[in-house]
Length: 109
Image (cartoon, rainbow, N blue to C red; front, side):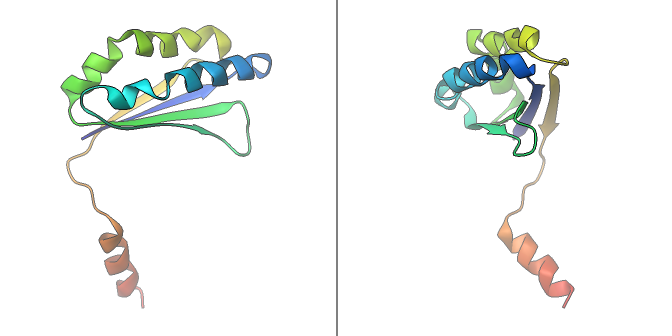
């Protein structure tokens, strides 16, 4: 699984435009082949900070998405931002769930 995090800080006067752009992109990625999830999050302390997180079955699926027109629109928001996009791509070899949390919590008792 591949996880992508994109950090965006909108110029205060361009916040609404960035948000509208992000919302217009929200539905389609999950319909793309290989997209497991796609979410847009706003920071509760800094209304100009946005975080886009997506999960992909494989790097090939992500690469296909990054060549898409929709991703180009996301990259095109750079003129609306106070600093360059920060993009992180993680390759996940193993994922655990609540069971791992429960086991860890039992060890501290």
